[in-house]
Image (cartoon, rainbow, N blue to C red; front, side):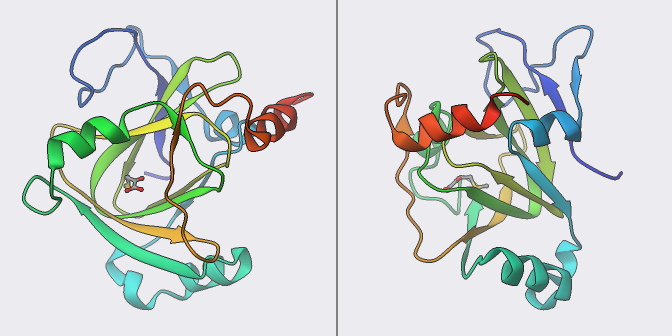
Length: 180
Ligand code: KMT
């Protein structure tokens, strides 16, 4: 498949790890994601340790830092609490850049009208979320994702839970959507 799949979420309070599709499904295209500043590349995760394509993206975009996180009950201390924490609606002062090396999970982002879009990511997906966008993350029922975390310079992981509307980065992000 070329590309990731995204859809508008239902409002149900069911388990966050479920797909939460509307019925009928309401798909969201890559173009719609780009309009809110979300970008995507498909890479070959089998060769991530020595991949010229990944290297090129990192050089062009200045992604000098990287580490690898394995999100799995046996690999991540305090797993269930972390899974809950990642699912709080929040923003960061910098772009969030994740390259999925194995497994699958969901990134949820808010659209211009404050509706949740769910983005299903799996092995080979590199996704960037812009600084200032409200978003959250969850594993699916497989409870397993291995991801490379990329960053421009020294990483700053701090998350600001909503409401964070007064941050300059939030205002700049909202402004960037105007007219599009
Ligand atoms: C983080 O910073 O650890 C996360 O964003 C969790 C999801 S990484 C696939």
